[in-house]
Length: 102
Image 1: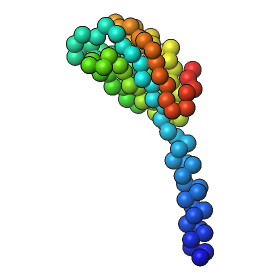
Image 2: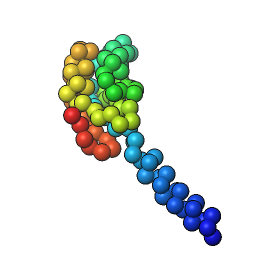
Image 3: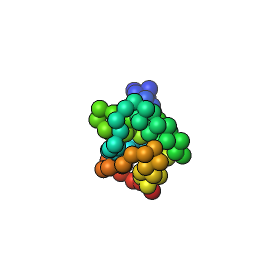
């Protein structure tokens, strides 16, 4: 019985810790891309940003998915500027999971 109680308490302590560092994800529309080189240049600009763990750009969907490092907040203005620096137009951005941004 004591083992069961200790196990349950341990699980209750570990579960919230795993949610605490959930990375923030930004999905943003990128218009004007026409080729794989456009995708490469946009990804390169986005991956340079502080706090970005990875950036994946889809030519087909005309969207970028930026995953922030755990504990980092997305800077939507910097993301938009990086897309403009790559030569394209940023559109609507969706921020997940906690909705906070600089």
